[in-house]
Image (cartoon, rainbow, N blue to C red; front, side, top):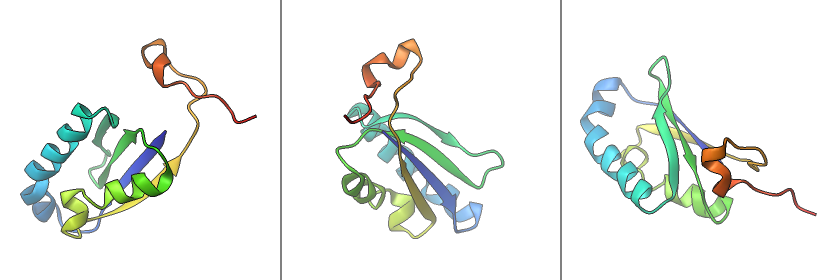
Length: 99
């Protein structure tokens, strides 16, 4: 599992201009089952996405397809983690530690 942290590198008016395309991109990944949760940081200086992926390289490539990234409006930080403990609603995503 991955935490994708977006940090805005452009003024909010430029972010807002591309926001509809970013939301469309998010929705496509929700439909594909890649994203589990997302939202704005508070204060509004970026966002966070909880994502599933094959490996770190694939997830990093996925971040480059975000319209925000393509327009040079954000910097991404990708953190991989093992979700060994989850709420019951996320049981299907629980992971095991490697042997």
